[in-house]
Length: 166
Length: 166
DNA sequence: TATTTAACCTACTAAAACAGTCGGCTAATA
DNA sequence: TATTAGCCGACTGTTTTAGTAGGTTAAATA
Ligand code: FES
Ligand code: FES
Image (tube, rainbow over all chains, first blue to last red):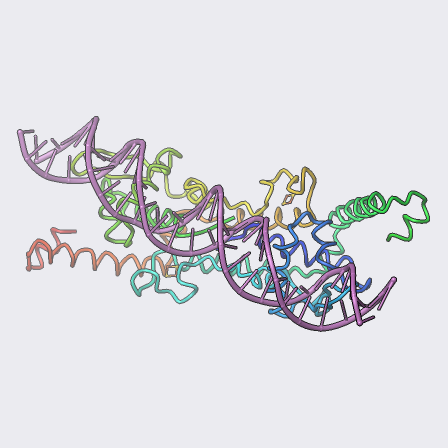
């Protein structure tokens, strides 16, 4: 079992998509900018997310990614699973034969743990996360920062531009 | 966060000690034989377990390792922790600053998860495991096999020898 | 129609961790 | 004194991580 930045990035990116849903496709460049994740690395992750039918892509200018289903029907466990970070804690992948074909002393303990973790993560949907206060606060900060970056780069200074940029 | 054979080996070895407690020190060679873990690797793990005061060692012939405390007062979480497999799932180790000094979108989710896992694993003591039916069954099989090996290697054949070997 | 955008794809890489192995040393016992 | 079994450091092949680099293709726009 392992949970590293790969799985964390995947969930973060999916949550970013969920937060900005309804505004058309979101480009990976935007997610990269907002979440501080390398663009190329995001591409690799989204290849897997797309193969697992968690996102849909739109090519060309103005293109990007969208969630393939409603936020209520995507949970954290499947996102982590999609990028190959199994939540399984056993050494036998559940088959109970890690000690030269036989069940090891602690097999059942790891089964219980795996079940526990999976139950927890699969009970949390993207919608749950979007509705959390702490998430909304961080998202707000990131969006503000994103817009500021945009204005800086375009050189526009009036409040009207700020509005237009969003 | 990661949970690999390292942590699994550590818990398995500690449980082996618990199961054979009260029979004097248990040698790593015995644990290696029973649990199918490389002896040299066990030595490395027990160096850490000893530094974390989870086991006491006795040197010389007839020596080995014993639990340093009662089985009720050793839980699975601290064993895993002792061999450097943190149960922490955050990228910031709880400090909330993994996105260039600021809190990332999913920080609180990983905090919750870490708490969940830690609560689960620290609620399970070695005594709990020793008393489990499934553990007892596997232990019984391993002990039987261990004695058989012993008899084979010494060449003794009578039931009395079998008894003496245990 | 040419250009730009952004997804898509493959291959490569430095660094770390994992799961060991090997050889030698030291304390206690028989 | 020989044996046992813990102790210790160094070394190793393999895998995974977290990227980078470089190119191709589809769609929109100027
Ligand atoms: S973890 Fe399943 S048999 Fe060992
Ligand atoms: S995981 Fe804690 S700030 Fe990102």
